[in-house]
Structure formats: C-alpha cells, structure tokens
Image (cartoon, rainbow, N blue to C red; front, side, top):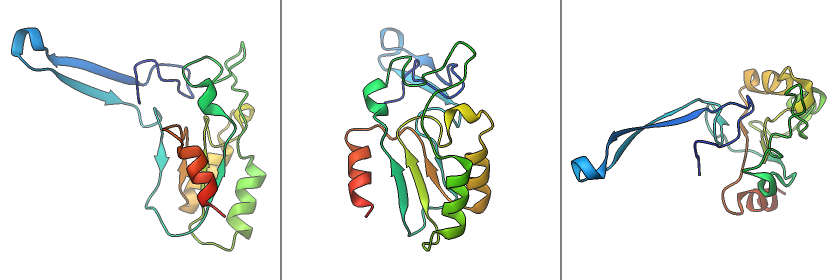
Length: 148
C-alpha cells in the first residue's frame, strides 16, 4: 500500500494526498492523490509482452517501512543489490526470448551504488519492461516461482 512515508529512490516524499472533502463537514471523504511516477511500484512498461522475466528477491519486503529499505549511506548513496549494466546488456543481447522483463523487490532495478541508473537507461530504450519494489503479499515468491 502506498503511504505518505513510502520509501523512494530519491529519499524524499513522492506521494501526496490532499483532503478535498471531509466527513465531518460533507458527510463523505474525498482525497486528491498526487504521485510521482517513481513512487510505489513503478512499472516501466510500454506493454506487457509475452516472454520471460528475470526476477530478483533480495528480501526487500522485510525492510519495507524502515531506513534499511533504501539502505542509503551518509552521502545518500543506496547500498542495494540490482542488475549491473553488464547484466542488463547481456539480457538484451543474449536472451532468446523477445520481450524479456526484469523485476526486483527493492529500489532501483540497477545496482544501487552505480548512481547513474545505467541499467535502467540501458533497459528501457530497448522496449523492455521492468518492475521495481515488488512487495504486495507474496508477489515476489509467486513471480519467482512462476518464472522457470
């Protein structure tokens, strides 16, 4: 569930909800949400093609809601596992399945210390899809077990 304090790759709040109507005054509640494209579980997908997904389960769900989820050091650099540029390039060039996607249970899809988002910048222009922060229920395990 996306909340006001949901961790983001930027380390700043990216989800906002404004109270438009409240129950005490209007007899119903209405909130106006505003969310940055990189908050929550971004799905970078031009479409969801048939094909394979290489998913990584690094145990991010166990750190969700704590500073350990971003695992940033004093300089703000994230220490999270991810796909290095070489791995993304290999999957683009050598994977036999057209439309292959990647999924991670942390932020971002690339190696956190790289700081240049090169895996993301390599992956997306090739018309491939990526899912970050796979967290809901047992999605990580379900996704990992369905990809064989």
